[in-house]
Image 1 (spheres, rainbow, N blue to C red):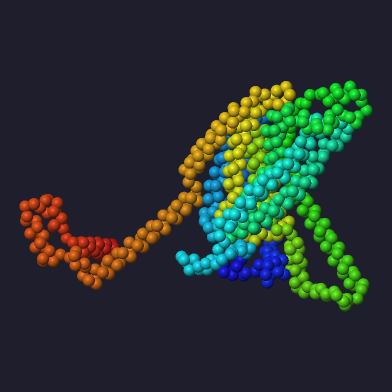
Image 2: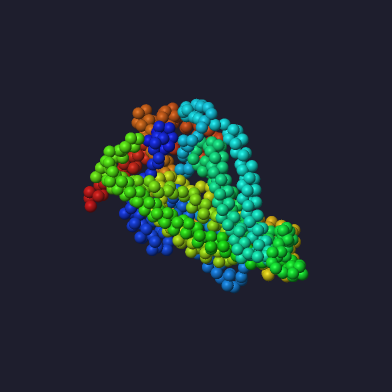
Length: 625
């Protein structure tokens, strides 16, 4: 943090601090072991547990674990209802689709309420308005703020807008690159598995998987790097605005890589496979030309009609919601643990090898080599611990948020295909909640605590996926419900205008449901909001009481100093004027009544006398008792 903002001004790998690699706090290993032992045996984390995470790792990570805990609790109902629908109603149930969309809306709105309660509990409300300046921000000019008189650094908004327009070609390039690759591999997979009848078919079916495994991570990494450079080029002044812009770009990439295969299966392969797939046989390989068969047999084989596999969509959803989740857990937990073990063994081997060479050879360093100083005996253990933690990777909470957002998208968009999706996510997130904390304590550096009052733009991403889920669920139910599959495996009796009408009504029903849920939740007063309302009331009351007390003191001081305001004191002249005015025939009864009353100053004197008399009487009664 800059010195102007209360920091030490140390900027690793920049300027005069170029030799400083990183700055991070050390782990409290005893506390980490206590937490891991206690929380791995719990089903749900309590609010006090979240407070401990927040106190130790900061609000930003505290909000992540609070969101993960809330998401896990929310999944209990969809998982139970999904199992019942899977047993009783089957796939593509309209009842499940409606309940799933409603539950997603309720979760998003309830999380926003819980987020508000947490920011009150943790006293970070509106802390996001305090923007942290980026060290990488490059200003074009300086100016003096007319309101504060401070020097400010200016980067024209029009210049930034021109740079932001580059997001459009970036999005198009991402769609073309990833979309073309995924669509091509998808077409190859369909062709080999359902059209091709030649030799080596059992081996060729793995080609699309190999291509996706090789090229999708590579292209995604390249596009992510371009997204970061593009965000750097946009030159945002604050860290919050930078994170928001980068999150939006990465969300587009994740949306394409995560959901495009399922969209292609649901809305291209199954409805239009009968028309599109035969064109994939551009090499005329279905006739098995390499096999030793007669020409007649080849013609008969090529004449075999193509049949759409309706279960492909369900298998695709099961892969992304079950198999892929298991693979991610292995890559996230087991692989880093094994990698770290091997790294430590290699480091230990190199150190022992260096010591053995040093002991066997000369103790003086040769020319061109620098002597490595040994650690002091009292500092060796501490420095070894520091060096060990320095080799750990930094914890990126954004990656975990992205993972949960993608998972919520599968739940909102495609769980109607297979109602057991919530159950799979419920089990996965029970493990995720604990594995992420273990990862922070053991596999990553201790994060630097950062203040935050929300989960940021991920709320907008979740709301977008919930809205898109209302459209997707309606389309899937219309296409595949009621066993509306023809003899060739494609949906039968489907018309385009009816599909558009279903989507239109589904979206508007979603908007009405969201409005009703928002109004209903706003009527619920939580203890945190009640406490905040009481605190505001006490502040206002204290302010008004202090103001009234100050005014009374000023009036009393003015009255004792001047003998009361001249215009409110009763004098001989004022009494004669009142008597003359009341003797007139046009005086009403009200005028006569108010004319007999004393002035404000005399009334206050009489009131003080009554109060003093009452107090003295009370004291005498107490003495008599």
